[in-house]
Length: 306
Image 1 (tube, rainbow, N blue to C red):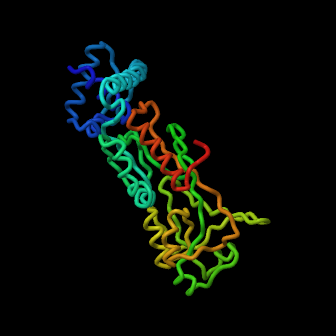
Image 2: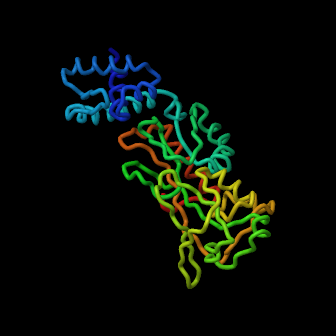
Image 3: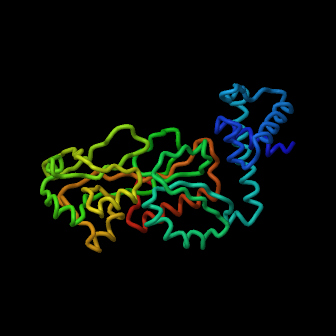
């Protein structure tokens, strides 16, 4: 039995709650993971996990052992890093998930710089606006806008999104140009709604002027759960949209969108890079976090709350 592999298998079963899911994230067979955990229990002479046909639960002894295993695996990773060129050039695979517009407009165009700095880091990037379970899907980090629903996650605030309200010229020709946000509640105006996968209810748009504070819900004919699709719907004239300014910039320049209510303010949205609790912040993850924060600052999206 390789004790390192056994401890790693045990830790992943605890984190995913399943031998099958642990095996998938470790690229091993379920049988191999099961045997490694059984051999570890035999060596320790302690039951670490309670197994039923439906679920796997960690025992009290297993929970205590897990906490020590996580620290030990982290120390081993640091030891290997300190004795290799990875001390200056981090290496390995990072699994991450980022919103589609941020990936398309900011992160991916800047990746040549990242890979020039860290040529031995391999990025597996999921591009979505869905709610990712970092532990069960074995994702190292996610970049997300808005306050984090899962307060157990560790997070670094890497930026701040500033919003504007926009419509396509074709929409304004058809429905008219509203002069006050309350007009968006009228029967002849439509918005495009963004459906937050991690929220079960609709959040109205809060807007401020010098002497007014209102919330606007609006009527919609289309709701989407992807940022690029949301932008495309606005450009197509399907309704009024609320966008981070970085997403609207090129479309304003081309005349595909028109800004509305420019004397009104919208609340900013924090941008977080989040990673699982009890997960070692490896050198490769640390440098990626720092690079994202630096990139956001260069793009004018930096946060003073870092």
